[in-house]
Length: 295
Image 1 (cartoon, helix red, strand yellow):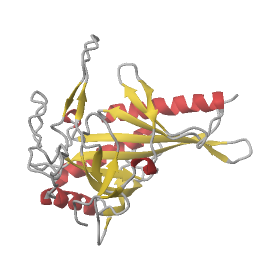
Image 2 (cartoon, one colour):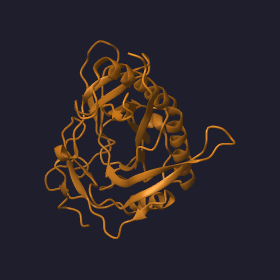
Image 3 (cartoon, helix red, strand yellow):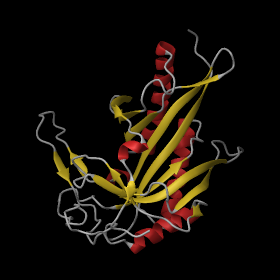
């Protein structure tokens, strides 16, 4: 089978930690302390029975400023939702986020061209919404298979999730989008964007649109890429995934809808992606309005 013509379709989900002194719904510090696990927690960010969240005004101000800078429409009314799922680093088994009424949506960001004489590309922003972060699983990386631990210092840290439309068409363009977004966030002073400390994280949704012999277009299954801790790794992971999906399509002919959406991690040492799990749909999270927070 000869290699078919195809186009690359990429959408990015960027999480940036807002530069606040306290967490999104409690007074615990947001200072980065990797050597002092579980020292910045309280009944609120741990979700203990009877503890009630209180909104961080500064976090909302910084998020609103970013939404305006991204040319988003600001909603007249917004509300909080509970996103239900369980991981060891999410002790209350739900995340306070926003679902169908985010505070901002339908924006855009212009990405500079690859060459100086080219034209900028306008990437549409689906939404920018606030949510709280989960904790962090800490695994033994010595190879001795020691116990894993959970550090809940990061639980409840204010995150702004910026979701793009699938308007990006190459790994290099995705990298330029991230660089432009980081420059904007730093200019606004809303985040320090330190990827090594988890202040800026990116997930990439990638698939191919392949031109069939009859002129129609066939889409490959969408894959969400995670565990990318630098712009360079984002570019490398997307490039690898494009090659892998093309080979998989030529081998199996699987198209979008034939298999569930998949989450894959990025192994920087091996330079390849690997299967993590099947991706949940929005209905699997059983969203409902948070009863403890007013619209």
